[in-house]
Length: 388
Image (cartoon, rainbow, N blue to C red):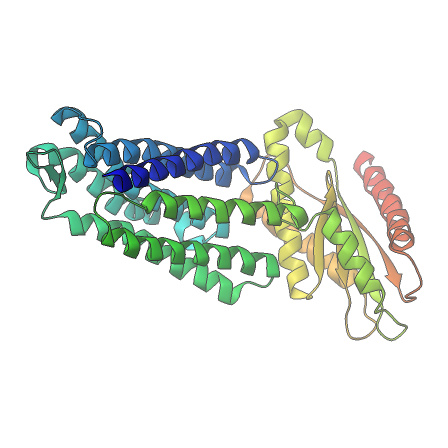
């Protein structure tokens, strides 16, 4: 009996530790280190887990007969615990979709269809006190799995399988190390869930699923922190820190026969977008511009970063001397096409200056300064033409 009580105390201590760690993580996860949509669903995952910890602790206390609840309360506790399992699986799936940006799921029809398993199971759980479909309680108020309990597990598993497929596909097709690492972290999370589910199936008087869910939360949190070190939270581009490290290394490889083209880019009339349409629209303009720059520079196997405000840095190192105006024209053409497609009340345009770096002894500061000087001239030319 003492061994049983010690095990219960240890279990509850672990639950309490996870509870406070969840609170710590949600306080540390701000919109500064993650995009807004990701923030909402990651927060939802943590909040669901917090509620699950409380319900699971109450359920365990009842199973050990340390606390005696009424049938009504235990029914509510069991229903809430099972609902949390399904909700965690569904929210994790949505977070994965947003994190990776899987294009098919942007369609409304696909989003509605993807929610059907979760909604169906939640309705069945809520009706189980009367139907016994998913669960019921015996005379000792211990949970008894209903005839459709397996259906609930299958529905939850569908989302995990979808995460494996989406993350696996993204890992295989991603062109950057950051995206591959992010997908690998999601795959690792699913692997841990599967391992803990197997362990949980071997236990009766305690559930380790909360541990599995916390493991997922922790892995995602670490991945977000790592991404934030080198990535801009608003646009998902490389940030100034990454640009400095990457460009410094790249400059050590330049030569007369293999020059590096460094481009400094600045959005035109960006302040007016913020002033007239508000900062949220200004943020959207930056995301649109960054998307265009990333798409164009990818065709040149180059590098792109947001280095502050509405300023961006691009680099291109072809195998031989080339015309940098080709890349600039491609950026302007792609931005014009994006303007026509989105039909915003304003048109985005960008001024770009460049420097050709051929001497590996030249500093990054010197290259950026030369590109900035050309950018300044082209910016003035843009505003002169605007006044005509």
